[in-house]
Image (cartoon, rainbow, N blue to C red; front, side, top):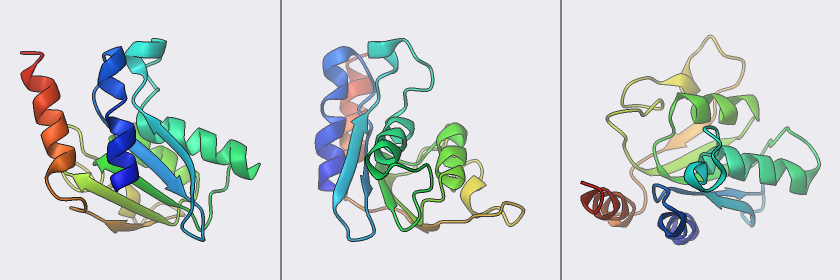
Length: 143
């Protein structure tokens, strides 16, 4: 989670919400990382999770991220939850819950829906208060 938090710190420099994601290979090594880049790129799909999954697929040479772990500072939204299911990520680890848009526990539970053909393991609430504090600090400056 420390690596995801460090990546999240980059996002405010270009006006983006401080969310960070890293992908670990089956041996636990970081193979990809990203922060939100929606403001930077003008791309509505440039969420940290989606970018990290794309970069991991490039590194591995396949879209199937079997055995990989996605670590993210905030509970994924519906788009990101769908992307991690479709990429066959084995495990999702996230820090803060997102009561407004979370699609892993807060609003929906996309990743554990029994109708889908892949359901990653989920570990939540990891990383203490630092990921949530980054978000609070960012939004306090934008109000």
